[in-house]
Amino acid sequence: MKKNLIALAVAATMVPAIAAAEGASISGYTDITWTHDNDTNLFWATAEVDFRNTVDSVTVGLDLDVDAVTGALDVEQAFFAWGAAENVTVIAGKFNNPIGMDAEDTLDQPTTEAGLIYSALANTATALHAGNNVSGLAVAYNAGVATITVGLLNEITGGGNVSQQGDNSFAVVVNATPVEGLDIEFGYVTIDNTTAGLGDSAWDLNASFNTGPITVTAEILAVDALNDELYGLGAYYDVMEGTQVGVRYESNDNADATQINLIAWHDLAENLTVGLGYNINEVANVDNENAIVEFLAKF
Image (cartoon, rainbow, N blue to C red; front, side, top):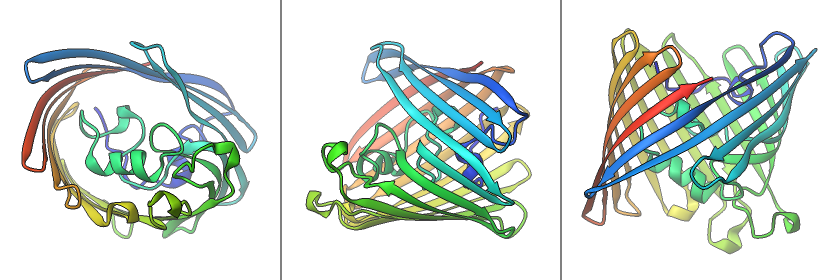
């Protein structure tokens, strides 16, 4: 069943194979979508291949994204993660932005359509790279009650030619599970590229609470460039093993935009999941609705 990866320890989020046995592995998935929008139908296919190799306390990772329709190839992640000391992990390279509730990979996102908050992070706050990714050095410390991560990054808004960058962004992320079933994350990152009108910081607070078959989520994101906050609420229900339904609502007051995602996921096989999403987007009182059928096949 498709799972919503929320508020995991940052080291585990960035390096899912870090606790795996020593050796090399290859994994990945294909993402096939059929979108029906205003009497038009569009099929699309993308894929991701993930390479991992662990030797002693160091895991090296490379994630490649492929657009099967256009042939475009992008390096999503290229990093090492080093268990430098007990409860301390050092991560360096290009890696998924640890700030925000939605994971970078569509395999781990809760709906068939990217949300307003994820899109703001990917397209405004971390415009240096395609997707919601960053480059730099981070240190994650597991303090027991919380995992605290600090990072020194390339200035995340891009600033034009990457090779000419002179500014940096500083990030802090705190993940905690104060009680069983409740995950809370707070992330803050500076933005030095004020000449582009993007302000000087962004912060995100999100939480997920699970009890039995029910999971509820809430998130707030503030990016100076948007001059306002974005809000999100979600609820998901496990009908049975391998079947989940849910709804998510997000709002961006500054852009006068709202989004409602209705979703159902079902495991057709151990390595094949199908999702049916109905998405309602409203911008400046203009509605746009679409239906997306999504197949996620893991290998």
